[in-house]
Amino acid sequence: MLSVRLTPGAAKDDVGGRFSDARGDVWLSARVRAVPEKGREVMAKRLGVAKGAISLESGDTNRLKRLRIADGGREPLNGAIMARINEWTNLA
Image (cartoon, rainbow, N blue to C red; front, side, top):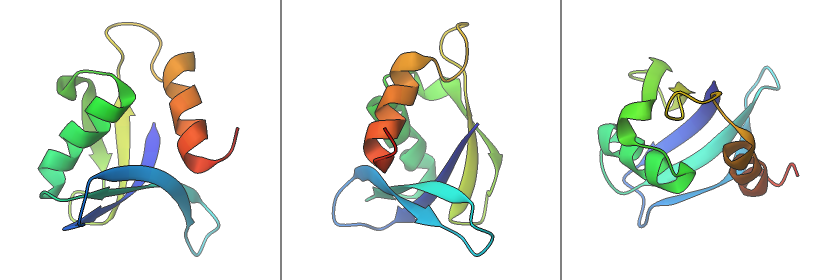
């Protein structure tokens, strides 16, 4: 499960940084030019997975979204994907 704070209508597509909510939960920040549905395409491209591998678990009408990522039948969020996420959030 990947927690993302998605900001649509940005000047350019970008993934990186983190956002902490009032409860102290940490969310990956993503900014997209397009509507949120297209944001799924941006996340898929940046993670190196098929768009169909990403499903929205919660946050349909909210900026804070929880995404489930299946990586072609392999373990979800495998090492390569986790390395990218850690790089984006500076948690590595």
